[in-house]
Image (cartoon, rainbow, N blue to C red; front, side):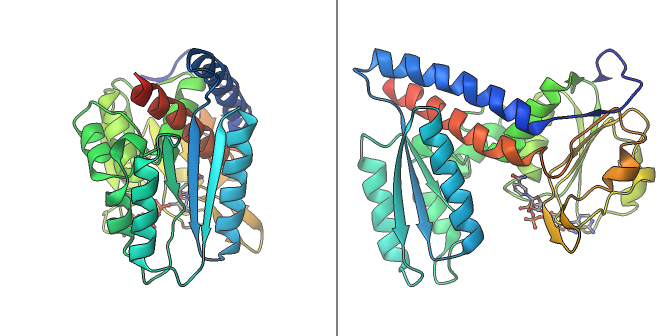
Length: 291
Ligand code: NAP
């Protein structure tokens, strides 16, 4: 349980380096898949509605990295006033398009569009964000296919840092569909004893102090203080908060690093993993669809 080998000095987990390894692995798989399929590489369709600057940056990054590992990237940019019907029509086209192996709809969507209805419309075989009810259900049942990218990235970082979830007390702060809930399933499937905290949790500090693996996915700058961290624990900070001090996580890194056995920084921890796992999911979706 906990850190294999019992680290005495804290290890800062380099998410950029781990993400680069994942991309290299994906690029090899892409080459093999293409060779076995008359040169046809897997294809990822990205859909962006509106002109939110941050979303444009995220999608641009996803497209660049998709092409960087040798996959095809097909982009659909739609105007802010796009109707739900129009978007659902596009999703149906992409579902039916044999050249498209993965569909990524960048969230959030403009307010006139029902996000849940759009996610539900995605063919679960192409659900590379892992957000459809079918993907979530399979994960919750312990037989996952396409897993949400950020929690999958967290598991990859733990593996890389030599953290063994089996038998460990894992505490996740945050219960979103995007991060907290799927991560709880992943850790449970890996035989950790999982506690999920949220805004109504009593004695959050006390619960966190019991954790061998502590994951913060809240969206509240430095909420998790250094004295909430058990000595030697693995601390994974999913939070990305823009503050006057720049981008900071949900963990008070400067204090937590003094007691943690392993810890992710922000930026450079979980962030780079999310896109890497999206690429991995696209290869997985393509291999499964192509048999
Ligand atoms: P979210 O949907 O807003 O969920 C936040 C969760 O935190 C909720 O479950 C909420 O509880 C809980 N919470 C809020 N205040 C709390 C408090 N004081 N004590 C305990 N729990 C509290 O957020 P999300 O989408 O999961 O994202 C969380 C953070 O991760 C954000 O900073 C986001 O930017 C970041 N993120 C990063 C990546 C990445 O690639 N690095 C990807 C996704 C998200 P209730 O359920 O009770 O409201």
